[in-house]
Image 1 (cartoon, one colour):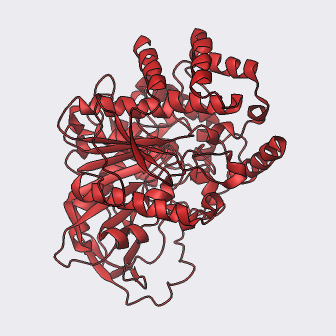
Image 2: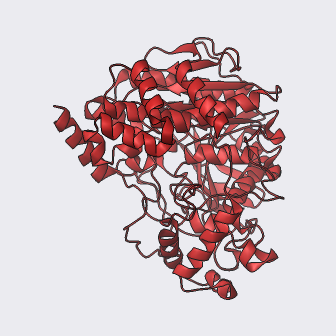
Image 3: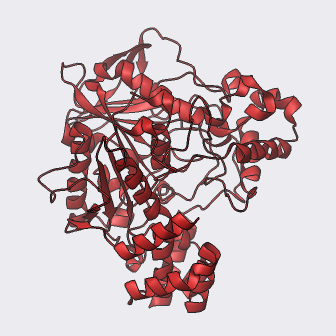
Length: 559
């Protein structure tokens, strides 16, 4: 039976998951064309028209009355002279712009990151054609400019810094806007080499910000929210930014960006607590390798503005597959933000929390079985024995391997060798980073932190995925009906989604995720370590798996 389960799971991963970029053939990217929705919602009402600072936009109305605006520009095209440069405001337009169509998603290598959202591509698809005119937002709102000031929930997509789009159906905001009477937004921004190619040390001051323009896109989107969201029924003084995995990493980074200060007021980080940002030295080495792969040197950097996008992505794919610093590996996909004295002056939460985030309430947490995502693509994982477990753990922790394996064997006596590896890899990475962020933020003693763990196990593939990385996305957004591949459309999944969505809406509105549908959720402190465990029966536990937490805290202190 176990052999059959492993075979089924491997077959699923081979057909539905794309890990990394190596060996992927990059299709030619034609000029972006907007993608029309497959159908207008049955019974939809009149087409709403909203004002922006750049012109009017026309959207759609759902049968329940939610107004939807797709592909609304917050920046100009990033092509040509605008490549690698900070975002430019869009040009004003006359008349009424059609916002019933999905805007462009950022150009990207297909399957460019080990993200759970890649599973969903086969089910939901990532809507919108790729194009450099990708600085757009999608908006869901109950009403337009009706005098009410609704909380604004800005969802930042996952996919590391190299893949995915806010157009992905898993991020749809209809249910959240309707349930919470909030304005919900998703954002597209530059990715990979187009968003995070550090040319500053190779080409001078003209490219001073090139290594962080993907993050500056997100700042520009938040500036657009500040300047325009009242016309969509939202309150620019009550903005939540939140995301999962890469979206959580970007949220963590925005907390440490001086340019983003004051543009948001709460933050949610799911499976993406990022304590540090990238090394400038590493980013420069990566840029040099990128140029070399394209047959260029620093004297010919200006040619990058004219090359076809598909050539740039080929260079990205080749460069990012090279490990430049064995002891300091790059972010998934190779490219990501870097320290910059003007934009990101210090690491966000290492060795301490950035003072820029001191007054921002934060929700942070992980899933129970994050590591099943990447381990599931490894055939050896299904044949792991005690010796194999110790060998893998030794590669991770060195001489501490026997101590770690013995500890986890005692804490989880019924777990298989493979399950122990999942526990160790999940805890040593995602979980300890989330705890470190929470601890360091609470030390500032100016805003609460709320910790969670998502324990709901997917029944798919004999339950072997567990609470896999990214599986909480649809629950937070009440979109479980968009992922039947993992929820089996179970009533208990939809019930949990309703509870979690209500908590995140309450957090957006008040800074506290407390709702009648859940037990009281206290703020996290180093003394109590209250953690909401989301499952069919939700409960709060103080310091769950505390002995393992203490071990990793001591190990972190020794490094």
